[in-house]
Image (cartoon, rainbow, N blue to C red; front, side, top):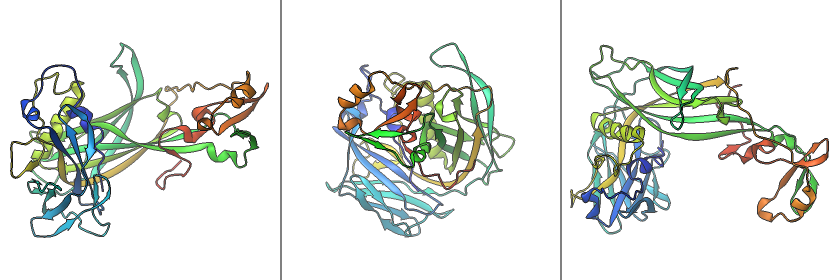
Length: 379
């Protein structure tokens, strides 16, 4: 189980021309960034390490040749293997998080600097009761226009502890259908395309770059009811055919909740920590030789539950694909095209063969798309 934090850094450390700057960061030329977790699910678990410069925190360099170890308080440990620059992985049959056990992360760099998180308990995961999709109208952030779309909400089961803290990450998958059939392909020469319908339907999966947190502290019921998650407008291509939302619900401790709540607040305000009151969002990794050194990121120890929902586009939502067949001077365009543009697909029209681009004719043109149907997909 790994977690993708590529959306965290823009939230925590957005490049800015304003003058406010946390003086703690300014004392250090390079800053370690840590990304990873251990859960009750079977691994492998992935830890990502990078170094960012305090002059440009949005750009980072992978940290290689480090000794990265996940350690349980009862003495179980596993040293991770670097399988790509800055990315360290446990064995798929290696250490596995156990509910009630406490874990920490240890990192020793090639410069022999030792970083560690404190021990955190892996909490009993709370199950997801329901994921709700409601057709709602939301006001656009950039205009005064009300937009219809799907609002997704989650309701948990009754939680295990007196005070419970939750973190949600979301993953979306959507179905893509092309409009025009493929007849020929051009790649320096013309060829008739066999089995062109294989590029007619695709599926694309992506991470939703949003953070959601909630706590049962102060609630009369020891559960979260209809917690708002993401909103997807009806004119988004992702809702054109069929859409699936995977909700990953993490049961976390109070320290992790405070960290992620701050991330959520910073993200929802649309400001960086250079435009708001400057403060450092403290993670749980420290240099044991120099506790004043800032370290960005968090090693998360959590119990996880997952649930998936499928929705079709309701009639009140309309998506208009901007597709057209171009037939004017097609032969000239093809003759002067470059290999980087090949293959160029051609489709029949009333005026002869024409060109169409993107997902109008090739479903694999969508980012992250594949013609392979996901194992979980239902129509």
